Image 1 (cartoon, rainbow, N blue to C red):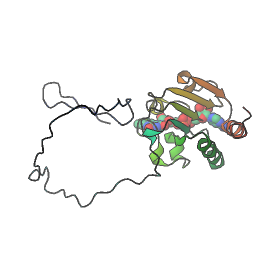
Image 2 (image 1 turned 90 degrees about the horizontal axis):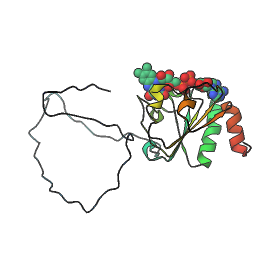
Image 3 (image 1 turned 90 degrees about the vertical axis):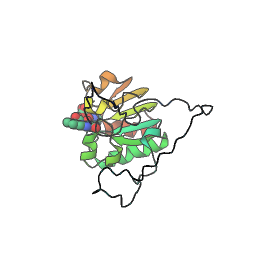
Image 4 (image 1 turned 180 degrees about the horizontal axis):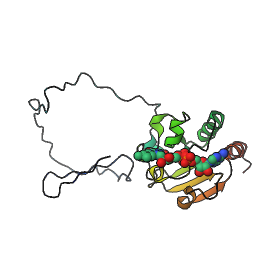
Length: 182
Ligand SMILES: Cc1cc2nc3c(=O)[nH]c(=O)nc-3n(C[C@H](O)[C@H](O)[C@H](O)COP(=O)(O)OP(=O)(O)OC[C@H]3O[C@@H](n4cnc5c(N)ncnc54)[C@H](O)[C@@H]3O)c2cc1C
């Protein structure tokens, strides 16, 4: 996160995090000229040397490409419930992510955190289980087409932005979802 103020100078700069906007269809009819610049002499800081390059390892699931995300919050208190949520998510073709509180509780991997300091996502369906709906979390799901909230507290702020809500404990909800007895 950075504040960049350049009212009187150029170049001006803007940055956008992945997932915050819907990608438009690629237009392969467009043409353009590619100009190769030789930047081999350009070294901003001679003390910095690139030793090697490596890609971040992931479990192969990209949050940005996921159409359905099931997100776990601190209200999902134990690993067994998370395991059941993962089982249900697999059944519906969803990826499991979580709030920062869930990451800090060790329930969800840090790279699957949603929010201001995590990923910004735009899935078709975002299912928040045991997530209160603090702004630092919901700023990461503004692009979601439908938000479903599952929370035991009917006054949780997440219900203010949810399209559908279910007031129930996470434990009871996942039990019913797995047995199709909603
Ligand atoms: C600078 C900064 C950056 C941050 N960045 C992020 C970020 O990127 N992402 C992020 O998520 N947070 C971020 N946070 C933290 C954020 O402010 C909240 O603390 C966090 O989102 C809360 O997570 P939560 O909703 O899972 O937990 P809580 O706020 O504790 O909410 C838990 C919810 O679970 C419900 N609940 C309790 N028991 C049950 C049950 N048995 N079944 C169902 N529901 C239950 C409760 O009613 C409650 O609504 C940031 C904070 C700061 C200061």
